[in-house]
Image (tube, rainbow, N blue to C red; front, side, top):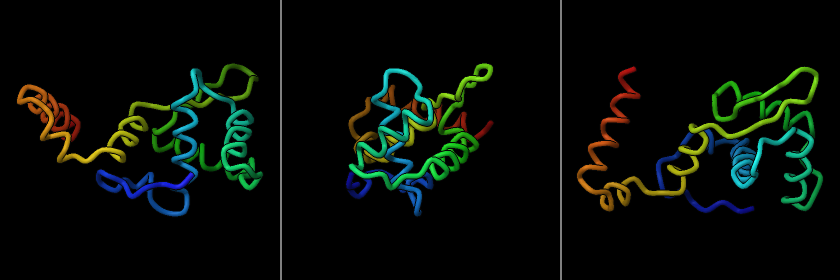
Length: 126
């Protein structure tokens, strides 16, 4: 998967060495109807890349970092393997990465701009 230059502001989750893997994880979880176990995610990642160059340990470490940064939620019940799903923070990051903020402001009505301003100001002031 080749990534185009982002339309919006550059987000830290999509920068650095782990950017491609983060984006691939987000896209797979976004199209999935339910949270995935690490083995299912690894299988889909390697199928998407058409090779086996993503290791279980690398994916485990990446998932742990994304959970700590609140981009993913980890659900673990009893002794079963944990499942991973996207949080609103990850969905927002994907949206902001693929859209230009200027276009959003130009297309939005005055009422929607006020709501957006209120939501952003509220998140900064908390």
